[in-house]
Length: 305
Ligand SMILES: NC(=O)c1ccc[n+]([C@@H]2O[C@H](COP(=O)([O-])OP(=O)(O)OC[C@H]3O[C@@H](n4cnc5c(N)ncnc54)[C@H](OP(=O)(O)O)[C@@H]3O)[C@@H](O)[C@H]2O)c1
Image 1 (cartoon, rainbow, N blue to C red):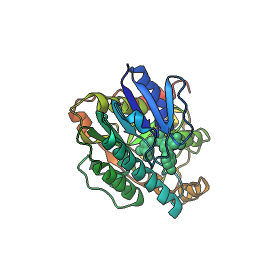
Image 2: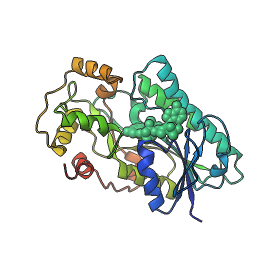
Image 3: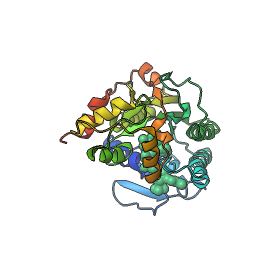
Image 4: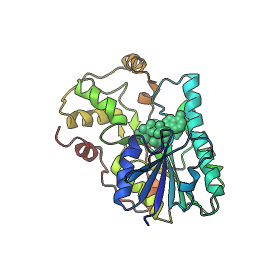
C-alpha cells in the first residue's frame, strides 16, 4: 500500500500542482475540501468544513503526513468580514486538524503547516531569516495567529514542520495569473518606488521542499520557503516583461496602484510591502534549488512565449 498524504485545502492553486507531484512520488493523496467527497480516481477528495471533526478523520489516522494549505485568500479587500474569514479559516483548520491528530490511534508521522513570509511585515531591504521578529500590519497579525494555532497543537508522536511561503510562481494561477495578464497588456511596469522586495519560490521547488518536509526526519520547526534570490519589484517586473516579450511598460506610481487595486478588489499594501527573505534553514540543510534565480523560474513557466 502506498503511504497516504492528506492535503487539507489541497483543491487550490498550490494543491493542484502538489497533488500530481506527490502521486508521481508514489504517495496516495486525499484532499480535504468543502466541496463534495469524490473517491474515484487517483486523486480522492473527502468533504470537511474546515472547522469541525467528521468522518474525514479516518484518512488522518495512519497517514504518513498531513499538510494544511487551507486559508481564504488574502488577495481581497480587507473588510472586517473578510478579515474575520481570513483569520478563522486558518486558525480553525489548524485547530481541528490538531484535534484529529490527537484522537488518532495511529497518528500521522508529520504535520506540515503552510504559513507565509507575510509574518515579517514591511522590513524594507533588511534580510529576513527564520529568527527575524514579526511585523505589525494586518497580514503579519494573520500569520502570527496562524502560527500560534499550530504551536498549540499538542502532537507528541507527530513531527511538526511549518513553512513560511514566499509568493509562489507557477503556471495556471496564483500571483502570476493577474500580473501576467497585466504585463501582456503593457501594464507590467514597476509599482511605486519599485524598491520593495518580493520573496518568491517556483512551485516545483516548493513541492520538493514539502516532500523533504515529509521524508527527512531531521527537519522540524519553522522554515522560510522562498528562493535564495528575492528581488526588488522593479527587477521582478523587468524579468516578467522579458519572459513575456514586452520590452517596456510605464511605471505605475503609488496613486495609480491604489486606484488599480481598488478596481481589482484588493489592497495596494500587498503590492507595496517589502520582504527580503532568505531560506536559511533549508540552505543549512543542503536543499538544492532547481530554480534559484527569477530568470530561470520565469523561463520555465513561460517557455514558448
Ligand atoms: N499562493 C501563494 O503565493 C501563497 C503564498 C504564501 C502563502 N500561501 C498560503 O498557502 C496556502 C495555499 O495557497 P493557494 O494559493 O493554493 O490558495 P488557494 O488557491 O486559495 O486554496 C486554498 C484552499 O483553502 C480552502 N479555503 C478557502 N477559503 C476557505 C474557508 N473560508 N474555509 C475553509 N477552507 C477554505 C479552499 O478549499 P475548498 O474550497 O476546496 O474547501 C481552497 O482551495 C494558503 O493558506 C495561502 O495563504 C500561498
